[in-house]
Length: 417
Image 1 (cartoon, rainbow, N blue to C red):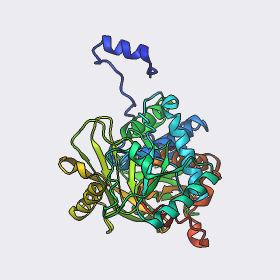
Image 2 (cartoon, one colour):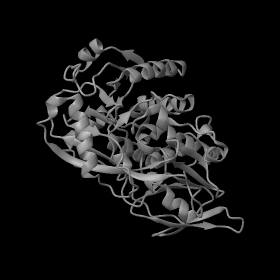
Image 3 (cartoon, one colour):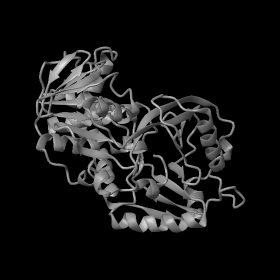
């Protein structure tokens, strides 16, 4: 497969862009692999890529029930950031952001990283105090963060409602300038193309229906709609369906699945300069390169596997957006969708071994899965290749729910994404 460059672009233009090769192959499922990854989203593809590139394990299959990037990777609001409160979270999310910063060069694929900044508003005296404390904690964790005043906000986001008579008056905010957005499809396609170049087999439209285990209970294969595949190591990265696959393997996960919805407006000229979040209303907004305003908000508070949202949540999200930007009231909503996110009790992920020998987990990211794709894939690849958890993943083992060493980012972050 040829490398993308200015020269290949010129050659493609000369051919009318009609002779570009497929970005990845469509191989048949082989009877045996060294490692099988379940899930062809960002985390699964990243795992396969790092297995092949970093650890030299290339006899790998990525098995996807649908199509590449058709799950949460293609159904999110594209936000990346690392401004988390706890040291464990700050470490792994900043590792992910640093990988994102070099990913276009690494994959030879433009992921369209836009580090426009991530702004979180403080809309009560208590929020001001808490956010100032969080900024100090983030700096102690070597995360770039700063507290900004209302005057600075007015310069940064001129259309933001800064009236002191608002229902939730803005009193300040925190800003991570390295935060921003990434093109979600490009992440999936870039990892898939790069993994395929290294020999990874990507198998689409193939559902895992069960697991084959030996007399000691360890994994020795997976059963799929295209036949049984033998392997001694399986990585599971299926987001909202993690508990379903775990049940097929014979154990329960402390995970609940919910719909997290988003929507976009008709395109307009540049109006929102950063990613703007409100802890008070639980909503956030950014602007895409096409000019659409990308809007997200709180969970639908009932377990669901439906890739759609509810009208009540849509109404609440839009009310919060209009509280921040009243001038958007006349814009039309063009599309609405939802992703199925898997939440743990402490809103932190699970990365590491499962109770079944040979089966390893990457799940429980909740609304933060997209921003964690590079780190989640790297850490899962590490334990699959070495049998030992990566230092960034050690605090997020399944065993913490037995010991009580939880990392409660729900209380610390206070927002879905």
